[in-house]
Amino acid sequence: MTLPLDLAPDVADALAQNRPVVALESTIISHGMPYPQNVETARAVEAAVRAEGATPATIAVLEGRAKIGLSDEDLNRLAAPGAEIEKLSRANLPACLARGGDGATTVAATMILAHLAGIQVFATGGIGGVHKGAETSFDISADLTELADTPVAVVCAGAKAILDIPKTLEVLETLGVPVTTYGQDAFPAFWSRHSTETSPARADSTNEIAATIAMRRSLGLKGGHLIANPIPETDEIPSEALLPLIAQATEEAQTQGIDGPRVTPFLLSRLFELTEGRSLTANIALVLNNARLGARIAADLANLR
Ligand code: PSU
Ligand code: MN
Image (cartoon, rainbow, N blue to C red; front, side, top):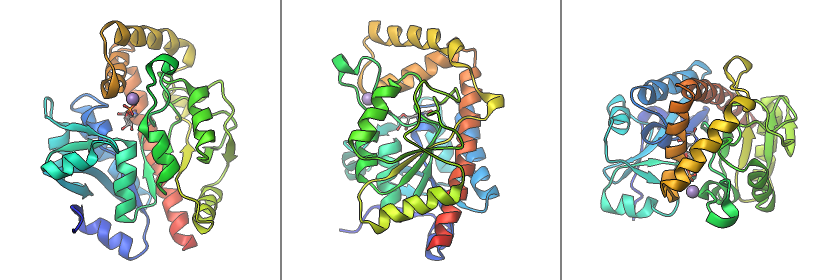
């Protein structure tokens, strides 16, 4: 069976010539941001990757084809308000492809498709993790197990403060996923530069990160690498301001019976309202920042090969 995988020509060329490519996800477009900021951000992130000399490959499933690199029309379709786009993780990716459906890929599904396409670096906003209250809800994102299995390096801004960050780091440690924070000791908390946790490792150069990724590969160890990149200082929202709003949104999700894959999109859109748009401005800034770092890591990796 041939894979239902379509590489955009510029992505295929870059990979064939060992030039740096950065994968980008699409759940953030369809389920993580409101229109029109979602499509504007998707374009700006691609431009940021290009400005660093790498080729962006935004990934999604459209009409049953896994698209590695999207056209402007594809981006519009994923971003359109009210579009019926499934949120795809490892579990529902095969059915969506088999049925010929449309879906936006989470971190887990993007990693799977990036790896099939031969892409080693992927930049996003935040990964899914262990949700607060997971001891009763058991809500732990499939992103974490994907990081343990699939050899793609994921650049993120840490874990969202809507998650239980200490438990998220515990699970990553158990799964043997290397977690490296760029340029500081504290593990970042998405909208804020610091969480209460110290990062398991720190790197101050992209070369050091690329060398670690290459070494993991040489050792034949399965799984990826999580690179946490703190949000730029000028864009951060201090955690004191956020924590009460997060508590409120989390409680609303519980009383309204929001569960499963709807939890993260619900909390993100409630926080957008509760922060009067500030959470979105910060989210856009951190994704751009991660795209630039991802491009530099991909370039260093390409030089090592
Ligand atoms: N972080 C964001 N916006 C998002 C997500 C993360 O800033 O939209 C998405 C990512 O695609 C991530 C997913 O993989 O949320 C996690 O969802 P869940 O918690 O249901 O696994
Ligand atoms: Mn979940």
